Every structure is written in structure tokens, then in C-alpha cells.
Image 1 (cartoon, rainbow, N blue to C red):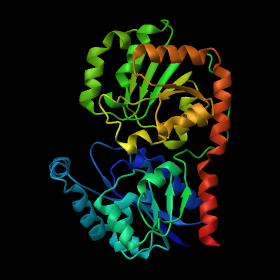
Image 2: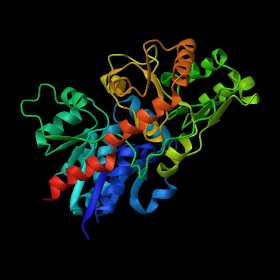
Image 3: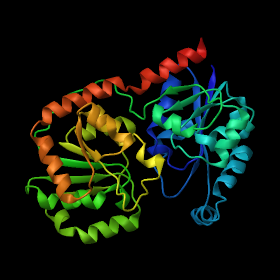
Image 4: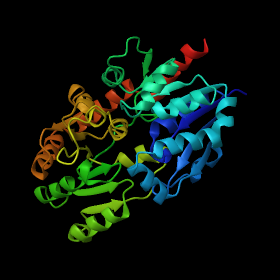
Length: 358
């Protein structure tokens, strides 16, 4: 049996749908596939992936210190080669996630494919370009153009949407007034603006925040919005949802949020403004209309008419968007499913692998 390795040098593997999808698709194609990665106390829920993962841990305090000194990536680079180097070298096919993952796989003796999740112009990318990148898998052409801007001979690329693997697409009933914020719960992602929108909506509207979060921020939200929690209008759920559980969970919601607070995030951060967020694709696959920020990475929402984009992140604007979706909820839901069908992860990856294996 052929073997495959995915070098993922970040700590949040259980929350990286692209990497988990890569793993699944490689196994479906007959590969004995494994992800080599690093763990952190902040991101847990590795239990379901133990047979598919080789990992090491870095103490949280050391991680914080070295991150401040801008030495954490260097430590990971050295530890990956020391701990995982042999497993990477022995694989028949390899994938390096972002520039650091690519460089690790390359120096372990592989000629890896470059899987782009974050777009950054950093020393690791410059090193990757010096080694030569055989092929890039990336979410959009806009992100590819930005990442390799100025490169005389940019590598060939294939589009790989940050989308879930969907076996069937079902139009949800959506009879209630439940709203969902799915993904990392943080102020910079508009969590409190979404909560504030409840004050501008009828009392039967409820909001669920579902995703990982720092304990301190959860405590802050609970203290600040306890009355909404007690009234059953606000739920904060940080429990883990496995990939196969996400879409069935989302189908019951009337609208999903994909927002960014640019008072807290720089609009000059191209990685943020161009990113087609994973939650966007999960909403589409579940038939959940989207309320998002009007940024490059979410223009699909406008083009496919599957939600409402906002230029201003305020509770009132969010509430207005909820009411706009309410007027044609089934139409928005149907267009979400149609857009999702065009962005199927397995279909795009199989097309790439057919080219590799021929």
C-alpha cells in the first residue's frame, strides 16, 4: 500500500477542515495516510484521530515566550525534522501545509506539494521558492496571485476550496428563528455584535455561539450577557463537533454569521480580507444563508446571492440583514446548496490527484 504524509505545523488540526479532508480523500484513494503535527493545550479533541496522527507537544509557556521572541516557528522546524523526519522521508507522496510545512517536508527529503491555508510573505516562503515548489493547492486565484506576486516563474496551482466533504445536500426546513455563529469565538470575529443584534430582533430569535474559545473570553461573555443566557436567547457551546457532525448541526439555523471587526483587525491584513473562511463553506453545504463582512474572501455570497454582506459591523445592521434573509429564507437556502455543489472538496482534490497519478 502506498503511503502519504501531510506536514501540518500548527496546533489546531481538529479545527482544520482542509487537512482533515485531505487525510480522508487520500485514504479513499488507497493511501495509508498520516498527519504529522504539533499539539497545544489550547486546542484539544485529537481523540478521534489518534490512528492517523503523529504529534509532539510544546509546553504552553514555552510557546508563548518563543512566539514573543519570534522563535517559535524555528523551534517547530527543528523539532519536526528531529521527531518526524524519518516518517516524512519514507512516504510515497507528501503535502506541506503553508511555507513552514513545505520547507520541513523538503528538508526531510521529499518533493512535497504546497497546501496553502495562510498567505504570508515570510522567510519560510522565500526559502520554499528557492527549493522549488512543484505545485500549489490554494483556495482562490486571488490568494495565489497575492502570495506569488513578483515571482518570476510562479509554480503551477490548483484550486482547493476550504469546503467540507458532502455526501448529500438537503434543503433544511428552517422553520425557527435560530441564528448561529460557528467557528472560533472571539471579539475580532464579531461575537459581541452578533449578540447585540438580539436586542434589535423579536424575542423569539435565539443565537448559538459554537466553537473553540479562550476560557477567559467565555467567562467575560457569560458575565456580560447572563440575562440573555437565562432567557434562553443566547447559548455558548465550546464543545467539539467532529467534521461529520457539523452540517447536520448547522441545518436547523435560519442564518449563519461570518463577520470580522476591522476595529480590531487590520484591513491591510490580506490573509484575513481574502480568506474564504471554512465556516462559509459549511454554511453553504448546510443550506444556511450567510451574513458576512463585505470583504474579498466573501464575495461569493454576493455573486451567488446566498446571503447579505455588511460594510458596517453594528448590531442594528446585523438585525436588518437577518430580516432581509427572513423575507426569502428558502430562496437563499436553495442558492447556498447550489453554490456548495460547485465547490465540492472531493471533486477538486480528485481532479488534482488524477493529474498527479497519471
